[in-house]
Image (cartoon, rainbow, N blue to C red; front, side, top):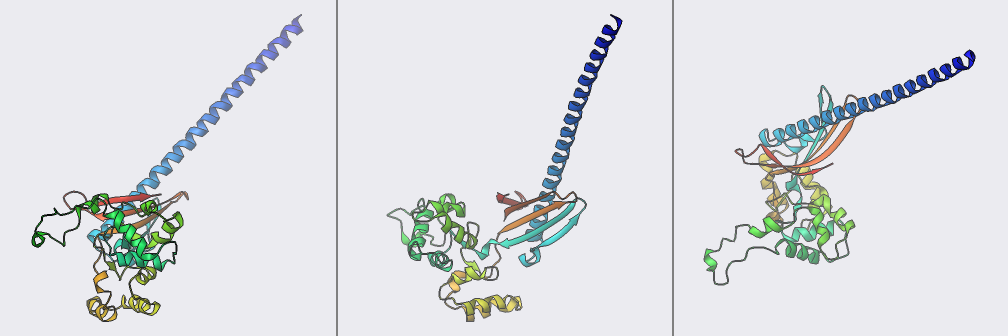
Amino acid sequence: MRSRQDGFILVAVLGIMALLLSLAGGTALMVRSAINGVRGTADDLRLDAMVRSGIDLAAHELFALKLPTARIRDQRIAVDGGTITLSAVDESGRIDLNWSDPMLLAGAYRAVGLTGLKPELFAARVVQWRDRYEDKPPANADPAKINLAAKPVGRGKDGFRTVAELRWLADVTDDDVAALAPLLTVDNVQGRVNVLEASATVLMALPEMSPSLVAQVVALRAAPRATIDDRLKLLLPKQQPLITTTRGTAFRVRVMVTTVAAANRSVAVTLARAPVRDAPYYVTAWER
């Protein structure tokens, strides 16, 4: 009888020990998960802080120091938490969907080799979309009192807000938009193409351009700044109404960050100059 009781006690003790071990294992798993969660949150916070620091630095260099974008291409900054890499592109080097001349829009369509529409028809559809709510002068208005230089109110409010909205145009496909996107913007409010910032493909969108002329324009960027405008007038006399060398007010910035623990993040933002009284700058677009 005694041996039977001892066996029962032994089984009970072993059962209790197994239960305690199970609870201990579950607790350890929960603690490990909590630690991993805290570690992940800490990495996210560190990455967010580094991205914000990169954006602030790029804005300071572009708007306060007015550094050329060539100085902010693959710019690497080592910080305590890791490395920040910046690249900036001036949006004035792209063709603006809302403000550029239809000749430039047609040229962009032609430059990327699209054939679904005639280039002029594509440009006409862009203009029709961007001006669909444009304020019109009254029918009885005195033509002498109409400010022809004023930008239409409707276009700024209800024109294209992103390049992706091209997809709403008839006979424009997703592939067409993808091909056109590197040439286009909605942040070049001066409308003219800054030839000092434009890519070779954007330059080819100008009327009567050739690879030889494009190469000469690119080479001209290394010339003394004070001589460039006069030399451009000789080199591109017919394109003068469509081009500029004036720096833009919006920049597309790529921020890539890597922590010492090898966590990484990359974002693309569009930074626009803001009135000093309002903010140092505006972020008008953000993509992960």
